[in-house]
Image (cartoon, rainbow, N blue to C red; front, side, top):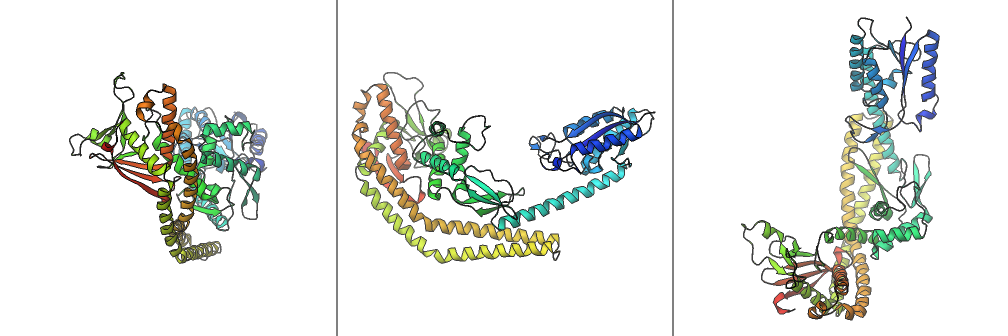
Length: 550
């Protein structure tokens, strides 16, 4: 009787392994077909796993994975199991046994399918497993081999990880780096990351535009008008907002690239910076602030939306309009403490709500009188803060050098352990302990260095914020007469004009105010913040709501 056989071939990485003759799909199938031809066997079907797919089983369920021999959910492997379970084949052929399985759970899955197939054959004999030489592969032995291969894979992964760590410690990148604005140059161990000036200028422009108040939509239109090239021309949307957001968010552009390992650890290397760090931090502060100030679901223009907090309990204060708009209530709305409203049974000073138009006017009036019209009041506070931070920065110079020395010593310790491990002078367990201890120390001193450097750099941040605010206040003084209109006169303006003025006021308040604290006894405290820098905080002082009238 003619033997009926199914053929199976697999490669994990099509772009690399498939190019090698010894494991290519074409060579695997050619060797198996030759075996069938020599023995007069009939080929029932051929199954090939050589494409990435979405995993249907753990680990990494739902994620795109490659067809590793450690996975039992390979699409063509599963299709082959269905044929085996039907009992219509006499043999399963593979180029080599590790093409079928490289993990005990995969061996168990295959053996279960073979057992089902054996029963379906009604006593015709067990289904055989053979390699491309015709040698029989024992099922029990295959399970043992799978356990060994699994351990081999684990050790290989550890060796690869050690190699990546060594490459990173030498300031090189161990794999592909596709960040827009950069290019890589191959070196002996890894890749050297360099600036791609044509792309880097676009990165700088994106950050400058966002820092100047442009939205992601406006930045996108600007880039499209300039016909700016993208990294990947096959993107679904030309300069999609997600791409621009990722560029604004990436800390790599400040000169630090980080490699994240699967166990949660990470190692950073220095790369050429494209933008100054203070610009990046301002943009991050703006993004976070925009999230807090987002008023997409609001029904009106509330000047203090996202800025106001209850001074009595510290909770956020929200705006609420009446259920029905009438001529009597018009644009009326109320700021209320959500904590007090949600838990009326708990003690809270009353009232915990305030008439919105009055509170908005009170804060606006105070910022105009004690900020825009008298910028020296702000400047004096910030200069004092700058002098204080300067003293702090000067005092940490020695500590910064100590932290840098400790980081250098730790890097030497890790390199020494790596050399000893390669020479076989320490066990894997000793190596793991040493690497874990030094990694904890590295992270501690890295964080400490960052904290100390922050103290030293704060003075520059304050100065940047001060320059920004000086320029802004100068501009505001010239445009102030157009928008500093009393409430009664503002009400008589057409709706569109009135909304335009309120929006401009809102932008100014958000540019100069960090938090507005409002109390049940009608006190209001306003805290300022220059250009998103916490180092440049100042106070407008306290005031009483009942001193103002609409």
